[in-house]
Length: 197
Image 1 (cartoon, one colour):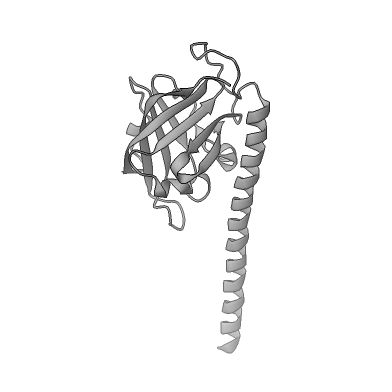
Image 2: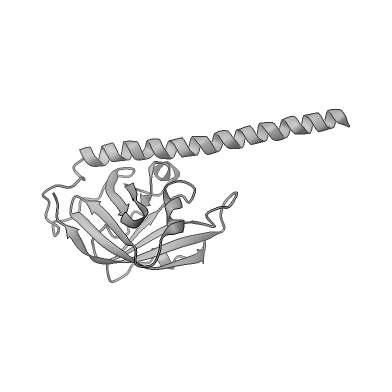
């Protein structure tokens, strides 16, 4: 009996070490991904330039950092990459291809992981400002509502006639395994903060 207890203890310690290692890896990958994305954004043609707002958007390549998302009240600054596959989302929140670009009419959808980049959304409130900076300037969105929806709900992904931003992450924020629901932050475009600098 004592031998079984010792083996079980060793197995539990090994499992704990594996989980700790995986958590640390995810944390450091997300930090490194944001560092790389910030360098790419600041050094690319998609960073703020003299491009007029009405000029045609040049769609970013998959995985390219093309925008910076700021939530001033939460002291948050995140770099947005194009795409929503697992490699993209390890680097940062991902803009869903085919949805509106920041500042443009339509539904701009950005998804991120609840346990890294979008953990901050647990503290967001109605009325908070969200600023998206691109080579077209800075665009101010104001949070209208937050909702929790089933993972099968596609309403937050649908096109809209007006400029809207939907930030989506898994829910609950503190959950072991694949979370069963989605947390959606819906914000409306309130205007351009500033043109390209």
